Image (cartoon, helix red, strand yellow):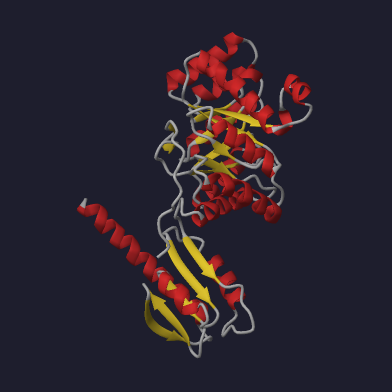
Length: 369
């Protein structure tokens, strides 16, 4: 079986976003953001429910004005997943969503204005046990830093972040996480590496405005993969110009590839070639579509021929090796032969059966304490 991750995580202070732990020894949280109109409560709740079904840990919602703040309060009552309010400039919006039960405030203290306004927001957060996320973005650096550095650089991003951190530390507020996002992979990675040495708080990772589904996935996987492999990162958000549900799927796939989270099926599949004994690509497309509802971590190998098939199949919970006929392995042992006629149906049945057995076995372990 594909085992534990060799990655040693950076030590960080644990905070709580609602009931989700972030940092410390907590699993890396997968976050997404709604792209519906916040004032459309029904549409936003429906989108959050879809994100939750996909496995999202935390959802961020843009709250640009007071009307949106009131809508946020209604949304909060209708969903279970922790919600982060994304707020810029107007401290009164932050105070209002704090009253309405927000789980985390995404603000930059330096943008809120006068010290008394920052203090009011921090006091409200402290009183209600609400953490804050400082979110620095290469596209919205302060004017004096733009002038000082000439253009966005990793050092400029980190200086901006530490400036906001100083606001919170001056008010003796430690429950925060920080992001330093850029659309350029090298800039973002360098900034996070620098920041990781400066603070003990959790880091929220993202390659901002990464692009469409394919290009954004690749860019995010490269950038976040570099950081996560070094143990840097406590929450992630994949920024895609696509359905937010895709952000969650990609986030889990990145974490699964590094053995940092296991949720749902981890497919091991060959790219196929003329040696294949069944249509690997068609089989995989059908299986992925049919089995999206399964949340149990399982390794499933789908290999088209006997060159690598038996080796991969023996390492998976369930493995299919192409042959004449095709051969199924379960927990590393040959189990049964399958023809191509009902290949996908039978494979789906076996995977679901194995998933149910795993749920039952895990429950028994928990029951025994």
